[in-house]
Image (cartoon, rainbow, N blue to C red; front, side):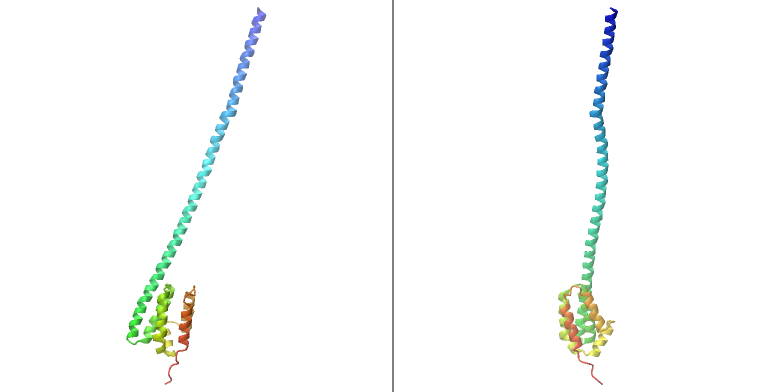
Length: 197
């Protein structure tokens, strides 16, 4: 009986050890197969989310900078357009004043106003009024002025004939008014010399 009891104790010991080994093996398996991957994915998800938030912030900053640059470019264009229109409006007032002087017979003063207005029309990209005023100068003013009077007109606007036309060429970057500038220059060059006293 001692032997049977001893065998039962040994069998109980091994059965208990086997159960503990199976339980330990299952726990290790569950930890390795289930818990570690969940922890790994959780940590990896946090890292991915952190990188994603960082990338979103970088993109947001880039977008804001692009929008500011776009707005700055649009604002610059609007500002330039406004300045062009302001120059054209100022030229219109000089044009009107010149017409009044022309009616009063003050050809030199009218021509000085018209030349200043021409420059402003060109700066303001008002090519229609630029052409009209060029024709007015060629048809009504220049035939009545000699070279000495033209020199006085250019002195009145603080330049020389050469300097004036050089400035017009610089302003006319598109060369849209080139033919009118050349025609005006030719008409001034063929102006009669001042009469000898």
